[in-house]
Amino acid sequence: MNNKLKYKLVGALLLMGLSACNSDFLDLAPISQGNSTNFYKTASDLENALTAVYGSLQYGGTYYSSMHVIGELRSDNTEITNPNAGANLQAVDDFTNDAVNSISSTTWNAHYQGIQAANIVIDKIASVEMDDALKARYTGEAKFLRALLYFNLVRIYGDVPLVLQVITNPEQGYTFGRNPKQEVYEQIIADLGDAEASLPFSYGNADVGRATRGAAMALLGKVYLTRKEWTAASQKLRELTDASGETGYRLMDSYGDIFGPTNENNAESIFEVQFSSSSNGEGSPFTNQFAPIGSGKAVVSVGNPLGQNIPTADMEAAYSIGDARKEFSMATSYQLNGDEVEHNFILKYSGTPAAYLDSDNNWIVLRYADVLLMYAEALNEISFQPDGEAFLLLNQIRSRAGLPMMSSSGPDPAYVLATQQDFRAAVANERRVELAFEGHRWFDLVRTDEALNVLSSKGIQAHHLLFPIPQSQIDINPGLIVQNPGY
Image (cartoon, rainbow, N blue to C red; front, side, top):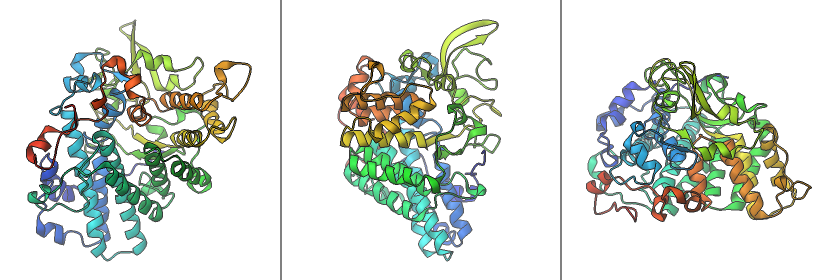
């Protein structure tokens, strides 16, 4: 299935709203009072406004670039091997990024622009005369997207401003300090609960790519898992797996059937950021971004290779012999001018761009394999059960990869998980290779308290578990916005 929700149907709205903003969160406004009062009159107006929220997921500071920089490059999965890939990226990779690094500011600004767009929908829809069911659905979609954006922010920065209203003038922005992350999580959970209650499990072909009830449930399960609320996580994820008859979610038969433009929005996909080449800037950059510098046209045939997300030797070694996922995930060499060049690079986002930085590859945010592994992890944290349900979930993933099943006892110790800690380590490794290069590894290491141990050789220190608040935010509002310790 290759249907894509088009995000950029909203030039007029973006001009009047988001594009009128400068790059700083506190200056997300003004939106013309006349425009904001008079524009949102019909269901079509609100659909355009909602499309702007989805469009924010394509920003450089969200899933176009920042989320894979933070989720992968910050971890042990990928690295910068050529300094020409960019100093700001190199700094994130080696834990020398500071408060003026552009990754922090771009990520902060883009996420808050998306939150502002979501707040517009949630605020304005109440006064629009339209079908009640459609109104509830649009509100649910906006709340899911706001929750996703805040979930990223709170994991990256810790305490962040919790803005739930439309900012219509710059002075309003100066009233927001950093809310404790507990308050932010409470709002995320509330938004996802509302989204789950109002969204359908599926849409017709014209709306494929919109947030669904299953997406809200999966993200809520991940939120609970991140907060180590194991029982709540297991209950929500069980609800989702039990609803497979309604959702249609399943593991694809082959790992290779998950990725690439011809496989997008498949039965394993729960939520993807939709990118579309040759569509007025809606294409994705990953094919160019992830190709090794110096590879010419050998890895990507159109545009320059940027070398921004190169798999590490440790990542290559994480795959067991015979793991079918490796051949679809990464390569270790390429042919250039008749010579074989040894160099790791990512395959999941391969393709032929329509132009430089203009590929058709979506970014998968949530998929069913992630759900099964989260569910297995939560069950194990509640109580280790020898050969219990958690083993069945883990082995579903391993079976597709062509790997031997794990059990709590047996003749080969390589496939025995006899304790809770054994199972915990096995799930962590399975998540690493199953979800490689999809933006999960850094967040997994942090939430499992393993980042300092795993990344010690890279020079990580305790304060690096959070990114620095952009210095521009502190300079704008030093009375309320304070820096994270250590920066």
